[in-house]
Amino acid sequence: MNINNNIALIGFMGTGKTTIGQRLANKLEWNFIDVDQQVVVQEGRSIANIFREEGESYFRSVEREVLNNTLNNSHQVIATGGGVVLLEENRTLLADNCLVIALTASVSEITKRLNNNTDRPLLQGDLEQSIRQRLREREGLYDFAQITIDTTDRDVFSITDKIVKIIQAK
Ligand code: S3P
Image (cartoon, rainbow, N blue to C red; front, top):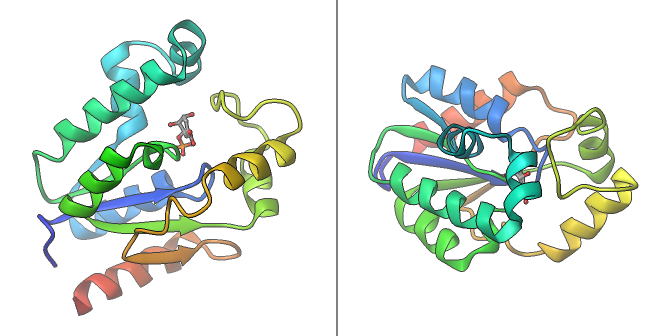
């Protein structure tokens, strides 16, 4: 395993980046970094408040800065926010510094997982429609990952074990 000994999990909201990332980091005994969480800490306010008070482009600039700083370190599992791939600069940064793993799930599974969600400002109105539209806008943007894993109908444990096996074989 190399690429600076960092693993980045990318993927749409609700694909399990944080849950799987935490477990993977535990198993590898690496640090777990959640980019969204770092943004919240740095800003001292929730994601929803950042979007409401400053707008999306401000959020994206803080997200980019946090990602940049994170990549100065190694032996980390990094869970990114679903929209991190919108900036080409972030995609290049991730590809150059991490083993990038994309997590996917079906629209109905994502809808189910995000049903009680209150902190995802980009999903407004009808949840399933909103998810479909955002997925369309982002089509292809997660494809630069070296590995893609569908998390629909699979539990966190088996997905994590699968990732560990892939890494060990590298
Ligand atoms: C976003 C995803 C969220 C968070 C923000 C924007 C997106 O992260 O960064 O609400 O644009 O897809 P999760 O993917 O962890 O939900």
